Length: 156
Image (tube, rainbow, N blue to C red; front, side):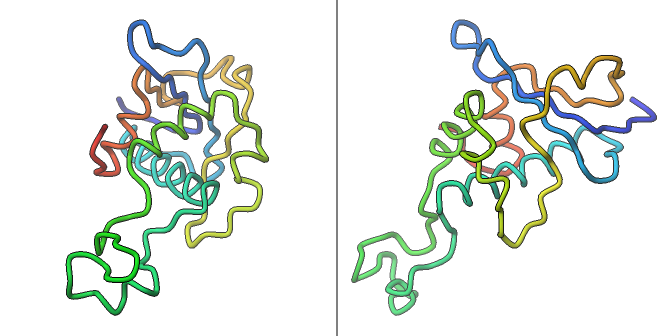
């Protein structure tokens, strides 16, 4: 589709009988995106950054693991070397929780990570009135799975 100027994203979770009755609306605070793919990649990155901030998880090695870097498992904590402290299931569950989250519970007000977030959450669906299909990117079902796939994460 030509002339896209994506400023909003709408996420729906679930499928068939597990389909959620609500949706999450996000506002792009940066320059409009010219393709769905660009918008979704940015949105996915912001969601992952907010998840990590809200849950206090990191991808970095623990200090104890550095001494065991050439091994498969850390001799101190037993953790597999190079494996994140979270799984895609945790991320997917957190995204489902966005339907009942508050701005404070999301951690979006005080995000201090290395990534500058572009998307604002907690936007009213009434903001979508009068917009065209070129202004919005929609994930009509299984938004959590689609976001994980965009990030290259295995879907549980």
